[in-house]
Image 1 (tube, rainbow, N blue to C red):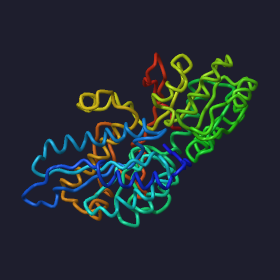
Image 2 (tube, rainbow, N blue to C red; image 1 turned 90 degrees about the horizontal axis):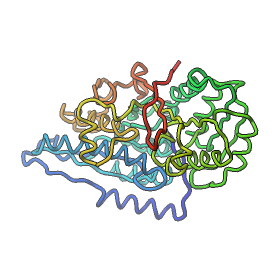
Image 3 (cartoon, rainbow, N blue to C red; image 1 turned 45 degrees about the vertical axis):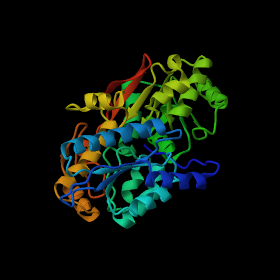
Image 4 (spheres, one colour; image 1 turned 120 degrees about the vertical axis):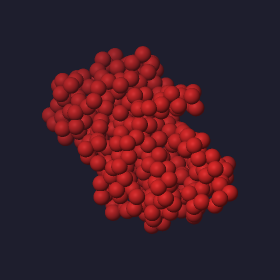
Length: 388
C-alpha cells in the first residue's frame, strides 16, 4: 500500500509534535532484567499512521505489532522488549523527522513499517544510512526494493503482483467488457491503475483522475464520464475515503456497475464514506490472506486484546514483529546482527511463511493476492485472485 504526501496547514509544527510524542508518552516500556543480558530492554518501533485519514489502516498494523510484543513479554518477564509507536499520520512530510528520532535511539534494533510507500520513500534512506533494519507489512510500491537499501524488507507482495491480479480478476472472473479506470494521482493509485489498464487493454472505455483523499468531495464530473461510457465495472486506484464518496455519488446517479479497488480501499472507512447500501458488492484486492483466517490463536488473542477482529495487515504486522523477536532471542542484539539475520531468515508465521530476496522483497514463491467483498456491512473474503 502506498500513500503519498498530504499537505497540511502547519505541517512543520505537526511533525515536531509527532517527534515529541514518539519520544515520550507514545512509547510502551517494559521491565528490564537485573541480570543485564544484552537481549533485555531492546526496542522495536512501529512507524505509521495512528491519526489522520489513514489511521484505520495504521491502527490495524500497530495493534498486530503490539500484540506480538505483549505476548513475547508475557513469556520473558525477566528480560523484556520495549515498543515505540511513531505516528506519521501517513504523510511524507512528517516521516523524515520521525525516522531521525528512531535512529538516535540506540535501543532500536528493528522497525515495523513504514506503513505506506510515500513515507517509506523519505524515511527508508535515513534508516539505511543508520543501518536500522525494517520490515514493512504494507508498503507495496515496487520501487522501494530497487534503491539498493540494505535494510529494506517487505512482508507482502508489491504492486507488480496486485495490479495485474486486479486486472485479471476483472477480465477473467468478472468477465467485464467495459471498464472505467480512475485514480487519485498518487504513486500508489496511479501505479495500480496503470497495471490494471495494461491487462484490460481495449476493455477500458473511460479514464479519469481525481484529487487525493480530503482534497475533493464533488465527483460529479467523474460520475458523468463513467455513466456515459457504459462501463459495467470501475477500477479505482486510491484510498477508501475518496473511493467511498465516489461510490456513493455513482449510486445516486443510478449507476449499477461494480467498483473494484486495491488494498487502500479495503477498510471500514469505505463503508462510512459510501454508506452501507452503496458499498454493497464492492470488490477489493489485497496482497494479503484474510486476517480472520490466520493460524493458531492469533484471531482470538487479537480480539481479546483489542475487542475487534484483526484487520488488513494486522497478521502480517504480527509476523513481522515476531521475526524481529525471534532474531533477538537468537542473539541478534544489534542492528548489524539483525540485518545479517534477515538475509537468511525463514519464518513460519500466522499469515505466511517469510523469506526475503536479495533486494528485500518477499520470496515470490510466497506471494498471494486475495479479493474481498463488501457484503452486509462487512468486508468478507471472496476468492484468491489470479497472479498470472
